[in-house]
Structure formats: C-alpha cells, structure tokens
Amino acid sequence: MPELPEVETVRLGLERSVTGKVVTGVRILDPRAVRRHDGGPQDFTGAVTGRLLGNPRRRGKYLWVPLGGVDPMSSAGDALLCHLGMSGQFRIDDAGTPLLRHTRVVLDLDDGRELRFLDQRLFGGMQVSRGGALLPAEISHIGPDPFDAGFDAVVASRRLRARRSTLKRALLDQSLVSGIGNIYADETLWRARRHPETPTSRLRAVEAAGIYETAREVMAEAIDQGGTSFDRLYVRVNGETGYFGRSLDVYGREGAACRRCGAGIVRMAFMNRSSYLCPRCQRWPRGVPRL
DNA sequence: CTGACAACCTGACAGC
DNA sequence: TGCTGTCAGGTTGTCA
Image 1 (tube, rainbow, N blue to C red):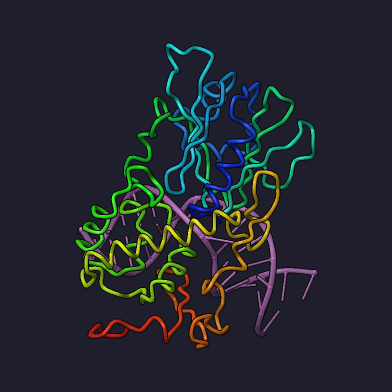
Image 2 (spheres, protein in one colour):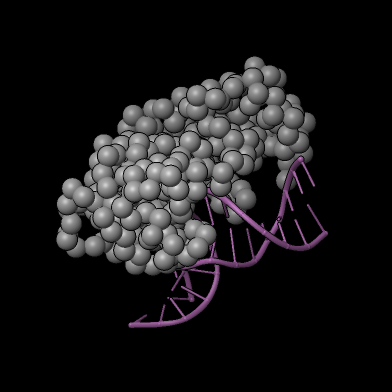
C-alpha cells in the first residue's frame, strides 16, 4: 500500500489519538509482525509495556513513535519503529471491539482504546529501536524525503545526476530520496513529462531538482486527500479510505485518455511490476535504444 | 556501483 | 468446484 502520503496520513491519525497515552498491555497475535525486533516477541512486549507514547515521526515510508516513561535512565530515547510494507495498517478501536482479520499486534492503551496493527501480507512490522527517538539507526541508510527539514534539493539533484541509471529506478531508490513508491513515481513522471527510462545522467541540475519538487507537489496533494486507497488494504486509523485515487493521472489508468493530451495511457512491465505513462507526453528519450 | 532476481507473505481474480 | 498462473502501494540480500 503505502507510500509517503499514506504513511503521513497514518502518522497524523496516530498523532491525534495515541500521543500521551500509556501502553498497558501488548498482545502479539502473529510473531512474524515483530520478526525484525532483536530479542524476539517476549523482549518486544517487555520493551513496550508501560511506556508513554510520544509524538509520531516519519521519514519516507518509515514511522516511529518515541517511547517515554517507566525507567527513563535505561530506556530514554527509545522508539517504536514501524513499516507498513505492502498491506500494513494501524487502527484505533475501543477495547473489546471484535478484531478484524489480519490483526497481528494489539497495544492496549490507558484510555480504554487499543492501537491495532493489521497486515495481510506481513511485509511490514514493528520493532523497538533503542535510542531511536530522534532518528532510528535502523533506517540511517534511508535518504531524507522531500518534506524533511533536512532535505536539500541541490544535494539530491547532484546525487541523482551522479547515478548511472534511469529515472524511475532512481526515484524508487529509497537511499537517494525516500518516500516515493510505484504510484507516486509514475504520477511524478507524468507531471514532469519525463519517460521512466530517461538516463539520470542526462538531466540538467535544474531539471533534476525540478523532478523532486514535482514529487513533493504530487505527494502534498495526496496528503491533503488522505492518500490513495484502491481497496480496504489502505485505510486511515479510523477506517476511512483516502481520496487521492480519483486524482491519479496515470497510475492504473491503462487505456484511459491522458488528461493533458487525450492519448491512451499505456502500461509497461517494469522491475516485475508496472509503469503507467502517456506515450505522447512522455516521449522515449532520444538516442536511447529501445528494448 | 548497477541490475536482475528470489525471498518474505496473503488474497483476489482470470482462465481452464 | 477446483486448480494454476498473474498481479498487488515494499524492502532486503545475493549473485553476476
């Protein structure tokens, strides 16, 4: 599911509902949801129980909640680090409400509600990051996202142009700039009128920076609409779907008319998944041999 | 460094 | 009613 706008929508929901609450209990229904936690499910439970939940933070598609309270001397600065993978979601429900299918972990809160982690495919998960409240070491390899206070368009542009790769591949590379996934890469490329196979080295500095500016714009609009929902696999913490799906210009619109020029949107295979683009607005880069 | 690919998982859907 | 193959918002590790 989730790319930056969806994760940010979830973060906003958590900010309103769990900040300042204390975890009174942890129930791990499927240990695979915490398999990345060092020490296993038992240790995870011990590290989270009794902790005060801070203000949720995000970088790219990663989300973390600073953990306070209990024993500040030994546990100060820890964080509950989460990734939603392809199908993860958080829900806030009143205690005792029936659990939905695919519920993997339940955190009991001191306000009579529960923070529930659901994940159909289990590509996502949670772990406690020791000392990770500011920025978990586990995600130090992830580059800043376009909304990050530390995001530098000049640096990003330089790194993008230094790549000996193609544009969509580079946009999906989380170590360069994080948060962009398959949907927003395609939407960004359409808006910037660039073909996915454009060699990165061909971009001028201003053009490269412009690509990230476009990505930021597209994702900001998506956040305003609560992200993109195709089905019930992505919902907000209150169960509502996002509305950006109806604003998508190319993703999933194979055969439909380009909103700019009317040409038929095409789908092409790309890295074991799909790319959608307008064959008229997004010309194959000149001089690049076609496959 | 770059790319190709398998692995990690479940479920919906098309076609036979 | 099966069964098989395909596809799906992601990340990581291995091998060339």
